[in-house]
Image (tube, protein in one colour):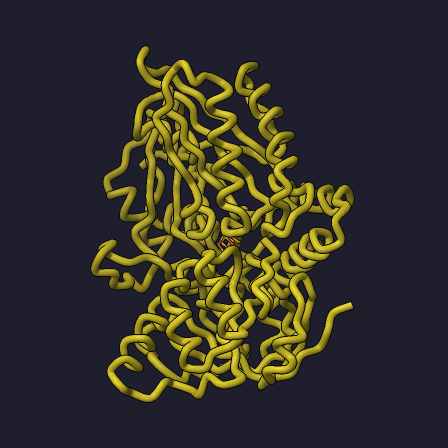
Length: 284
Length: 173
Ligand code: SF4
């Protein structure tokens, strides 16, 4: 029987949190540098310059990139040959707890949405599970900021609205959000499924590598067209106008009902903190 | 070239700030976000004294990360200002004139800023590490139970901000 030690899960989660909140992934930095080079507006350039300086200071001086160190979201892929004699969610949450306390990160989770009492350790994380073939446990983790999450949107379109309807909805959402979600953004778009699945797809989309492209032709074309149109909206970095509103658009689609065209948009700010780890099963 | 501002900020200086201008602030800044705003409005309405005299002072919408040992403050970038829209008019009536946050504000609030001859500045969201380097000292002066949301008195040097809504009601957005 193959398993993964609980302490390994806890430590991996803790390390991913402490690292991702301080070090911005190089692929994201490269996109920011490219945007800085191509941006024409003086104010937008000045904003991008400070965003780039910020990640340097964060990395070299070990200071969180942003004070909103987020609510932790995990996509966990569990190899089918693995067996756990402990609660995996509990182990992940223990890693979250240690990461936020030891990393001097802000605790931004309240136990009940109306009573709003802080849990003081940033737990619980939102965790999604999936099964994969093999002996591995993959944890994809993102401390997700509230500002960009709040500007996300979901709409049940009619099939007749089609591709144009989706594009209009995405553009309107980003235009209306303006500077609030801290552009430049990574835009995750979910299409299809049903009401709850489409939101899951949009979230999954922002977990993709910033420089990849969808393997589905239809979705890839939509990603390209949306990116181009979003950057013509003139929202710009922090909503101060300019050509850099989004760094990337990611589309994830799924089969849906003949009567439906669900669309969800999940916005990720420029503080695109994310990490993943693969743990290998060992004989218990 | 950024313009240097020192606190407290006089009415004349506020009037002279024009939308789009980049400024570097030095002096005292007070922090407050959602919960601190709700508390201040409630206690002032009940005739308690405000936690500090608003005249000439600045409120910055931020909830920093905890300070590491040996540091004045943790990461401390701005939070979204629109959530404070329902509290700000009350505080402006009590003398507050300068606010720093991020993002758009409501049309009603823009009118109120114009009426009160106040000014709204924005700091860049998501650059809390860079901004923390401008903070020399930080002291909790009210609502310590609110942790990250407590009111702090910060001493800053060259804190970068941009004029987003000026006293004439011109908005950058
Ligand atoms: S939206 Fe992102 S960058 Fe902006 S304050 Fe929130 S977490 Fe930070």
